[in-house]
Length: 391
Image (cartoon, rainbow, N blue to C red):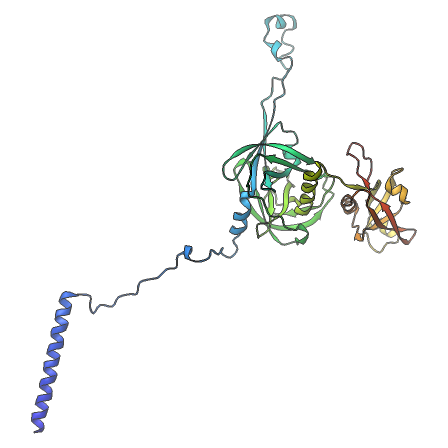
């Protein structure tokens, strides 16, 4: 009986195996890849489906935000016409005077120059350097959308080398101002402009120094120094932070070759904004003035006046009947603070006084005969450059 059971189990197994093999054979005929291993399809998340993120070290967002606000400025100056030119080809004129006028200059070609500017108002106000448009007879502005518009001068401030021009357009992409007072040496900055007329260009660098003065560029100097490449044509362009906000107006470079050598200077955005607001409000810029002539405190002078450090501004002269004269300041006094703000040198003193409003009463701290004295002074209005003989 056991043999009979074993034969029956074996028969069932054989029949089952035969049926399974037959099924596999049929499936292979109709689906040859039935038993082949297949790789799973690769699912890729498209960049459009994810929030756009800049790669590490990229400043694409800052550039994208600020670039539409930076414009190219083209200026032209009418040629100088030689008043004798119409006579030079006259046979009668040449008969009497010969060729002695051949060396006279013929009318020059129109002078063209280029620079950059920053849109500061959606209604068409553009900030640039004064030296970009100072001698221009015609100003043309090229916007980022390809439009070219003529511009007129709203106001200028040669003392800071800033100028405000306007185009007849609305809804322009105005720049966002940042506080340049919060900048620190080492901060990353981007310079945007039109160097050598090649087109809008972005360069990257860091803040190399702050508060640069005594460069002989402007009367009022408080420059941001940067190693971001600035070249001819960048003047008036934007210096921005990594968020795309304006921190300075590119103004000058130190160069022996005419090209960038890694030393560029920008006017702080805080000062640029003050100048812009005054030009818009009153057409010009009004600055404080007290009527003194000052010089820096050298280590030798500091030792002579028994100062702890070489800081402050020595009053070398006082203009008669000036606010300083009326307040009792005199030559030999050393200015230490103005309205509580320390006077580092004569350049700092100039900027601190200029920031005060005319008719405002201010307190200055001086060192006189080894004593510290506070003096109240009524700030005057700075005369025009042709009229002022001292600060």
